[in-house]
Amino acid sequence: MAESVTIELLKQMLRRLPGVTFCSRMDPATWASKWLYVDERAAEMWDVPMDQLMETPLSVLDRIAPDERPGVEAAMKQTIEECSSMEICSRYICRDGRSKWLETHCNVERDADGSVLWYGHVLDVTARKKLEVSLAEAEAARARSEDLYGKVIDALPVGVMVTDLTGKFLVFNPTQQRFAGGRVDGHDGAVSKAYGIFKADGVTPIPADELGMTRAMRGEALEEEVVIRNPRIEGDTRLNVVWTPLKDQDGKLTAALGTTQDITAQRKLEADLRARNQELAESEESKTELIDRLRYAVDELSNPILEVWDDVLVMPIIGIVDSRRIADMVQRLLAEVARSQASFVIIDLTGVEIVDTKTADHLIKLMKKVEIVGARCVLTGIRPAVSETLVDIGVDFGRVMTLRNLKHGLREALRHKRGERDARTELLEHEEPESGPRANGRRKNSA
Image (cartoon, rainbow, N blue to C red; front, side, top):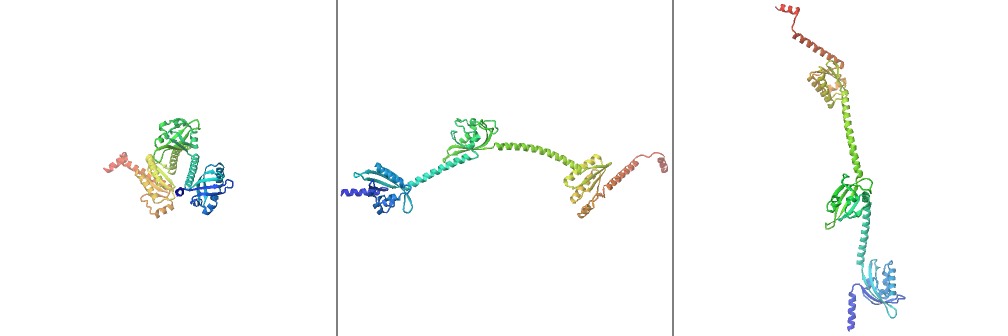
């Protein structure tokens, strides 16, 4: 009774253990096997029908994935030969196509009759295996990402530097090595001297505590322009550097990132453009002066003022009369009248094909301004077509004298001068005292 209770308790204990416990006997020559004990959960564990499992214990090998079965059988063979322990994890293919991973732990003993006794325990480690696979895949993905990131950083056309808080470069990509003439290790913090770093003026070396790298290691984000000059590179390299402090998820400063861009060609182009712009500005100034001189010469030619007789001026007009031109006419004509003391001005319109209301108004104002300074002004040479247009648009020249052509204008000027001369003679006769026989006779008659 006591023995029966002990066996029952042992069976309950085995059933409550995780996994499946078994014990079998095997003929080492034929591998023929039979169960001495197997947990009732074995059929579910190996996904083999119970009757088949009990009749043929090694039918569990049929559920092992084909690519893994040779390895399992080789491990079993070695264990039989050496009578050693075996630990193996294999993938099993269930009847519904699902996969599971089973981990088997066995100890082998050889019985007195030469048979082999297997004492084993099988655990379903599918969840653990999937986790391991996921972790392995994640690690592989991370490794691929790191490799990809490394390749991307190495292929970037901009320089990339990462330094820890001690000043040691953790990343120094090929582009940055080309900018700086290679990577210098063991600089002992003298980065400026090791790489030949100067301020933007290209003359002043940057002190260690003013370096962008040093300031970024103190938590400052900044952008700077530096010049690199050392024997390892040809000429000067001018770089635009952006420094960014790097912090961990807790906000603690861990490193400094620097990205550089070669702006040597850009700055040279800007300098060339400034010089070219200066040349263009000077050239433009010269051109402006030349244009002003040419404009003055053209104005002189387009608005000539001719002295055709004593105190008689003629200003022939050719082309279109606009506000700018009329202003020049007024200024030059009034100046010439004042200089020559002219008393008669002829404005000849023979060369003007179009006279509108605005042009007529300009001309009337011009004549009035001339008359205000003491000279008489007449218009000559108005074409028939122009006269029709002036009448049609209702232009009234008022008291302005208009003559047929320049000949008539000169004739009027001469008549005007004779009238002025006669008037002066008469004035002189009235002002001078009378003497001689005629004056005496007049005085006698008067008496």
